[in-house]
Length: 285
Image 1 (tube, rainbow, N blue to C red):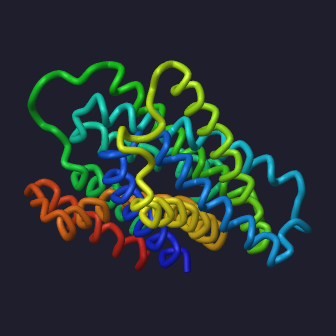
Image 2: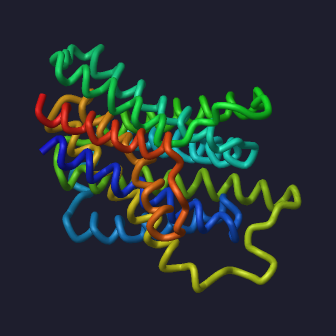
């Protein structure tokens, strides 16, 4: 069950990143974040009302609130790092986020077997290579590295926090609602500040209403991924769930190959193969 839900998480996050990347080519990143998360929040609100999730309110929701505060900071840092580039450095470096939940799992006493340790090492190496690390070229700005590390720390912290935010399915819906509501509040405040400083909230041609289904998909896929990761981490070792969930860059690369006809570099293809091998080792360990 842990492997299934963690791999589902990587699929959803990979597709959400792919869709978000396409949308930010035409629409400001902050707007993409706020609108997509607002749609997810609306859907979650309806689910919470329908399932009676309000009855699960309690101190654990502070974990969801904290995840909601950290998430937008991590995402915006990641987008800024990608804007500064090069993507061949930013994307693989961001996968260091897996170190946070894995570290938490080890601190809590989890001790993966030798086969799982080998699987973790192979899978993480594969994910880094699948991102297409830049092996030569101009030096990378220190600010790019710093922003990427902030994003990685933030993503990993969200992983760890959302796992602790609930113990039941209905409680998970409520926790995700609180997280998304906080995301929208923080992102909306940042967008307002950006507009006040002269930034644009929408493209010159106005709000891209035709992109609304894609924005909804990005927000709902990201929301669902948080939920499936929480389930995976609650039903098995966090060290395994975190590594399998971190395979999303492979999904993004394959989506770009399938939908945009982007050719995978040899190093990316090798990374995808290693990630698959690591997954098999983790699943059988």
